[in-house]
Amino acid sequence: MTHQGVGKFPCDTCKKVHHRNEDLQIHNSRNHQAGPPSPTPVVSLTPALSPTPARSPTPGAVQVVDFQDMLVIDNHLDLMQVVDFQDMIVIDNHLDLMQVVDFQDMLVIDNHLDLMQVVDFQDMLVIDNHLDLMQVVDFQDVLVIDNHLDLMQVVDFQDVLVIDNHLNLMKVVDFQDMLVIDNHLDLMQVVDFQDMLVIDNHLDLMQVVDFQDMLVIDNHLDLMQVVDFQDMLVIDNHLDLMQVVDFQDVLVIDNHLDLMQVVDFQDVLVIDNHLDLMQVVDFQDMLVTDNHLDLMQVVDFQDMLAIDNHLDLMQVVDFQDMLVIDNQLDLMQIVDFQDMLVIDNHLELMQI
Image (cartoon, rainbow, N blue to C red; front, side, top):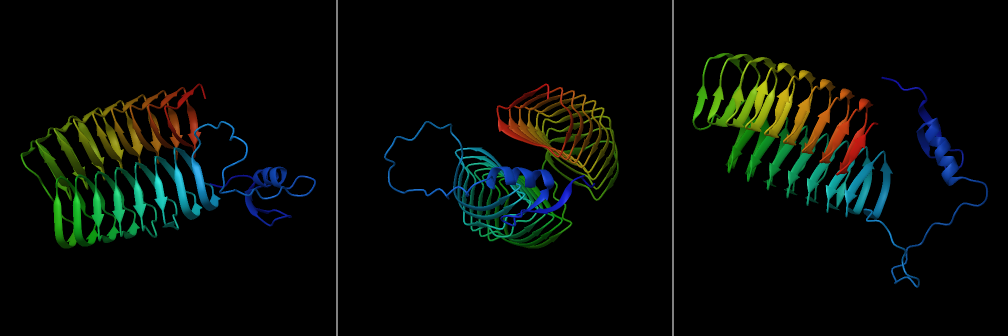
């Protein structure tokens, strides 16, 4: 898709290149008005002589260089020694970024996330509470979702999905196309896992036809009237799948997930607690991760990532390339969101 007015527009004064003519005009109006340029503000380390005026609790930025197309929305965000952020979104409460270099197209969403000595994250999505990443190198296309996940000495994860509670990965080398989901799983000295199938305790498979390359991991999983599962991963506790047809490349991970009247799921990752999907048609390449998410009358979700607690999406049409991450976000009567990022706490968007 090409956009009108997109290209390279260098500034005649400072030679900074902008991608849109509108951005160049805004840049000139802000930075190159008539008269001498404004002097660079000098931050004094000594106490100010006059009292500091009252300020709203805005995130602080310390030693931040070359932010491009970045959206930082947070409460009490500390950015220290951050260099060359490109197209990055950092959303967190009390997020500490220390010695972080060369983040590209990375989405980090967490509470109290500590990133120490992390190099060369590419296309990685890390969503976790109290996640500690120590000595992690060369993550490619990895999705790590966990509570209290410790990754120590982990090298060369490719196309790996690790979802667990209190998962300890020690001395793990060369995981390829592996999905490990468990409670209190200990993997020690594990080498070269390829196309591995892990099936848990008390699994009941009833009236299941045509399972191909399927990984089913669960406790007390009941699969009833399930037809034509291909390359599907179903992982859950007490998961009931009723009247589900034509699942292809679908990952369903949830507790007490009820899927009723769901048709034509393609490349969908659904991870949630108590998720109710009613009258949902034509999900393509969608990642839904939430607690108590209600999706009602939702049509034509494409390439959407919805991560939230108590998110209500009502009468939402034609979401394309949208990322909605929030707590208690209410989206009412919203039409034709394209390439939009909505990230906030207790954000209410009404009649937009």
